[in-house]
Image 1 (cartoon, rainbow, N blue to C red):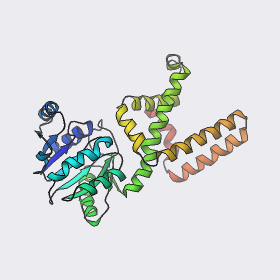
Image 2 (image 1 turned 90 degrees about the vertical axis):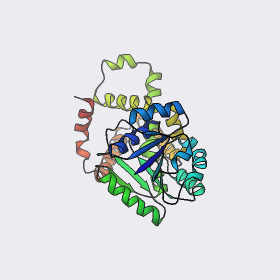
Image 3 (image 1 turned 45 degrees about the horizontal axis):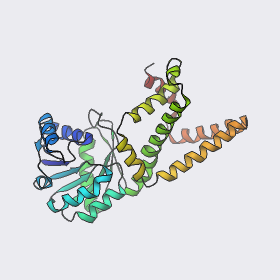
Image 4 (image 1 turned 60 degrees about the horizontal axis):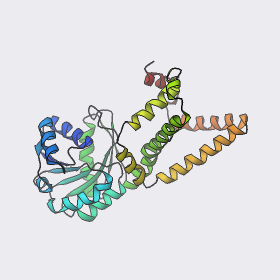
Amino acid sequence: MKIAIIGGTSQMGRWFARFLREEGKEVTLIDKDPALVEQTSRELGCLPGENMASAQNSDAIIVSVSIDAFEEVIQKLAPFTRDSQNIFDITSVKVMPVEVMHRYIKRGIILGAHPVFGPGARNACGHNFVLTPTSREEEHLASHVETFLSGHGGCVRIMSPEEHDRLMAIILGLAHFISIVSANTLVDYGKLSEMAGVQGVTYRALLTLVESVLSESPELYASLQMNLPHLRQAQEIFIDNARLWTDIVNRNDRQAFISRMKQLRQTFEANNPDFGKSYDNLYRLSGR
């Protein structure tokens, strides 16, 4: 099977190239920097593609480019697609990319996909994938992809692009937003070096989350924050609740604090059968 990866020198492009090469697939990498394409292809045992036309003889195409560049890339790719091809995008947003692919690609079957993990993953085992078909043809393709990924230990969920983006506003957008704001707070507080010597497990977990986000590409995170359609609503809810809890603390309203925290615990317990393991998991995360 021949597979072309548009944006093949990106981090996730490289991840899929390695994954598919290990499956014995013939992989062609296509990207805007010819020298980097040649170098990456040699490293991964792939074929270097000169331009979009290099994708036309492949059985499947994976588009691994930034959300900001997505429409331009799809416009350039569209003339080189064929009826027998499957075309996937792996961006972290789904409504806009799926709509763009339907608008420009008139040959081949498209499928929105989102590997909900980073390029540091060793393989697919235990990691989440979301597929967002919007027609019967796409549902049929999604079923085949689900079988393939599940066979490698992946956890596959199928949902609409709209539902995906609503969930990712929290799973990615709000989690990243809280991490970045927390990082800014820690810096402004001005005691980073002093806190390092007296940190507890909870602070260490916060620091792990903050530093993991800061170590990633600012361009990628900016793109996510600006393009997740439901993120502003999630941010507003978070900010409103930050004000509410600040007011409770400033009023020294001990009963309100305890009551609200108990209510939150009950809700989380009802929705997570493993809730009681969280404290132990926190210690495992800290390595203690």
